[in-house]
Length: 166
Image 1 (cartoon, rainbow, N blue to C red):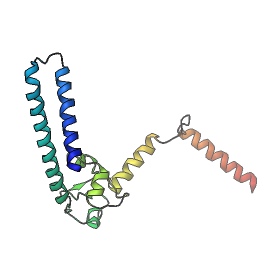
Image 2 (cartoon, rainbow, N blue to C red):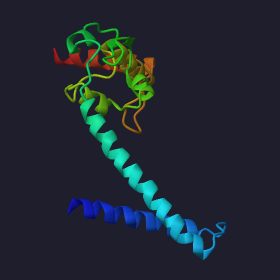
Image 3 (tube, one colour):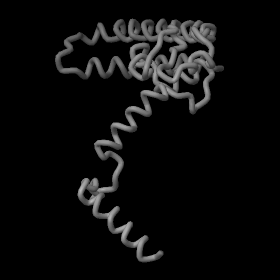
Image 4 (cartoon, rainbow, N blue to C red):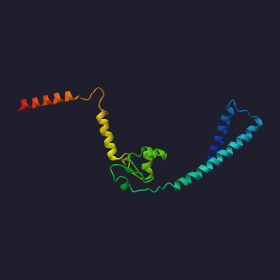
């Protein structure tokens, strides 16, 4: 029964593609050639469907990826993270993963990593955080960074308040 369903889907898809192709005003074909075109479209889709089944079966067999390094070794140095794909050192894996057509989530799934596995090295992350704080990112809107003179005045007021309390 499942074969009938997939064959019906193939026939429907071939029909829809043929209708769309014939609906194009630039397509010039006689009525006698339409059945041959439809048959050719069906054969093409059927061959693609059978190839995709074989390809997915091969992909399932190859789904077991062997990491280049262990998880412990990949996180051993705070200055960089070692890629499990090629064993090279990176400060951040995001661009490296995109060159391999993966997202961080796909990378974690491929190598069986926890969802909190870092993509950026700890020292690089800290330096970026410090830079962001220095330029004022993360403040609420309307807040402004206190100037040195304002900071000095508030410290002097605090000292005066402490003297009064004592």
